[in-house]
Image (cartoon, rainbow, N blue to C red; front, side, top):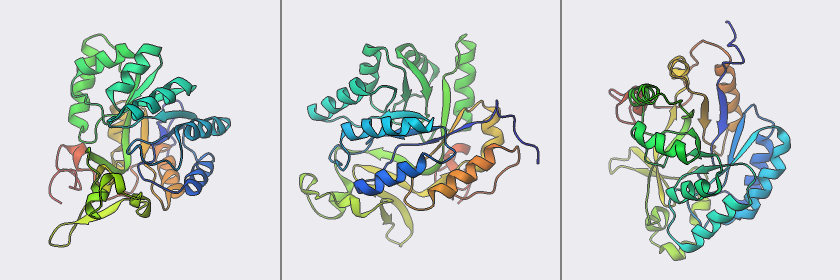
Amino acid sequence: MSPVNTNDMMKLSLGPLQYFWPRESTMAFYREAASWPVDIIYLGETVCSKRRELSTRDWIALAEELRASGKQLVLSSLALIEAESELGALKRLIGEGTGWIEANDLSAVQLCRERKLPFVGGPSLNVYNHHALALLMSDGLHRWVPGVEQGETLLRELRAAVLAEGLSMPELEVIAFGRLPLAYSARCFTARALDVGKDQCEFHCIEYPDGMPLSTREGQPFLRINGIQIQGEEITDLGPELPTLRELGVDILRLYPQVEGMADIVAHFDRARRTPDIPSPIGARNGYWHGGPGMALSGVGG
């Protein structure tokens, strides 16, 4: 087993926490994560502004606390800005933060552009061609996380188009592990499932630390309900695709936090990135990567 040259080794990132966990659990998770072999940690609320176990100021303070670990800390913004209060919180996040921002909404892109701050283009931004990517790069995008359905073929074509224009690709970060965020809505799916109003939700999503399972009428696991976000039930795992990811020039593998076993998951990907061998899968599906249904194992079939 030959090790990979450390200069060519892909980085690991811990993506933003998609779920609503108690404050103590969240703080303990990230303090433990400071010792994991990840290179980048994303912090912040990306799903629902009503989740206030940690305030905007708390996320900024946590980033400052974790900076001593030597990792890059990135503050993530909401994927759906609906109210003036949310825009105000976004301005504080960008104005008071001292590092990079993950822009998951064009409001965040605009604010970063105005302040000439480097930003990460999150997976909820709509980028489907090299013209859109070049425009965002001119606004300050230094790293891009493609949308969940953008697989190998699209990335290969987009990369070729960018290079043909004489431009350099930004850092490329691909979601390599976790439940994929499929959709966002002004409605709260969790509140609707529990037959309560969005404004009277009583923060029930904190009771589902990996999202609320949703099955078909036949009882087959189908989706995860997570506040205003819908996720796939399957845990995507691009570990077996590492040779192709390397060949495509992917710089960073994003691992989404889950409530159990995250340290082992990080260790698995850390071992995998250090060797040219193909790691055994620990997730369930990688269909989108192959241009098929997301729930398919390899884009064809189930």
